[in-house]
Length: 243
Image 1: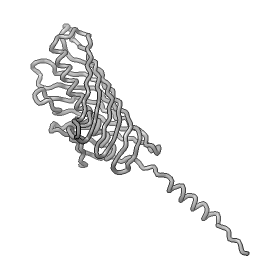
Image 2 (image 1 turned 90 degrees about the vertical axis):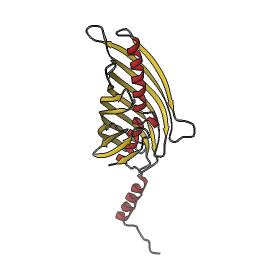
Image 3 (image 1 turned 45 degrees about the vertical axis):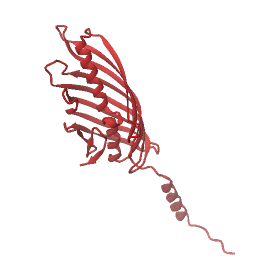
Image 4 (image 1 turned 135 degrees about the vertical axis):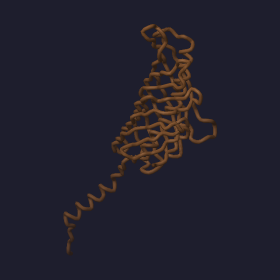
């Protein structure tokens, strides 16, 4: 009986094909990263916009009550979606504020720190998060028409994307905020910028690394640019639209 031998090069080719088919690692796309950033920003995901509302309200209260120079006060709030609405979210925020005075011992600005912990489930993304923030609030005098916040907000957690690559993994979103302005009349964000970084790893060990900016346009939206791709983020709903 004649014996047939498989050529070595065909065996190696088949082996390579099997290895390739088992490697299901897919990079997170810029659109998915923008969705992650949007959940760190928007009201309907318990993001930065919610925190700035707390921060300015409490800072003004402390300023008006005449807290002593250098004294501190703490607050905590829970923000969550209404029953039966989509997306669903729940975030618990804890804040500590310190009164800062000028050289004449007159109240000048308030600085503080914050932590938050929460969950989010929307049509494009499911996530859990732990957040930290440092901030400085100006514009607290009676004549000022807007609050001005400078600081940093960082949110770390897990995610599962429901679109594009449909990856799962961990991410850290860092927002370094410059002159974020909030109208005292409308309580809405009216301007400001932030540098944005999104880092992390997918469950398939693919690296996540995006850098860019966020520009708050004053119309309830922000333009977020990540690795050159630009998106419009609705600061209420968290919906994104590619420019």
